[in-house]
Amino acid sequence: MDTDKTSLTSLLGIQYPIIMAPMFLVSNTQMIIEGLKAGVTGAIPALNYRSVDELREAIRLIKQYSDKPFGINLIVNKSNFLLEEQLRVCCEEKIGFIITSLGSPELVIKEAHKNNVLVFCDVTNVKYAKKVEQLGADALIAVNKEAGGHAGTISYKQLIPELLKNCSIPVISAGGVGSFQQYQEFLGLGVAGFSIGSIFIASEECDVSQDYKQACVDYGAKDIVLTTKLSGTPCTVINTPYVQEVGTKQNWLEQILNKNKLLKKWFKALTFYRGMKFLRSAAFNSTYKSVWCAGPSIEHVKSIRPVKEIINSLVSEN
Image (cartoon, rainbow, N blue to C red):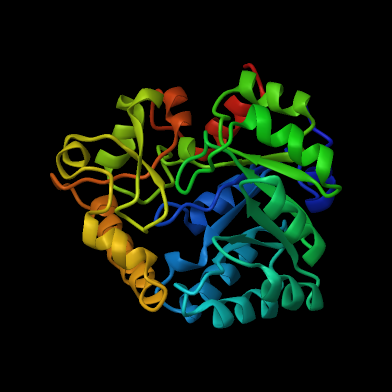
């Protein structure tokens, strides 16, 4: 198979309908560059950079190596105090697309479209999908319960057909694809493309620790659990001995603060900041206190390989 012509390939001018999903701490410029060379696209969370200047430098670095479109992922809820600055940089640098997560994309869609930047919105159900379509989203990223990170609650077998039936913009599936067979199955469902992340953690170009990469090789789908301790929102992690020890649910005080109308904005921001700081330490250091984000697709990770090889294994049986 030389080319998969779907609406995503047409929309972005790429060979294969795959977005290397934006993964907090994991995605980096080298991974995106290699992905672009191999015929796919990719996105990086803006929060992977400590400042908007670093974000701008990363965008410009990728553009030095490829003229193909790539994206930036923006958290659009109130926990992201840098949203407006990050959005401004994305528009000024004319990136290919923005992926919005965890909030209303209204501001992002409005400003991005002024600068001819596409906006793809994470959605987990039809009700929200119809809202973002009305706001002018260019595509939906259907985050199903098989996804890694902040997963959805509905299986792809239900979510994708519902979105295709009720929405008229392209549907990109996030979750449940880690092999050529699954890739073909989802294309048969009528998706416009894929957002695939976890299987790229164990890539040579990824900067995370060898322990994190090896965990993606050693553990499988049965070892993925949901935790609310990291960001307040359910997030998938590998069920390491440390995760088993500390548990996966917020304590009673955290739950109360998370629901308090006056305090929840600040508590969510604090929880998110604290959780992301903890993840940063675990991702890059060898430590007993390891909390590693990943999704069930690590079932198909058997070794640490170059990004190009991982992409080839998805789009070809050879």
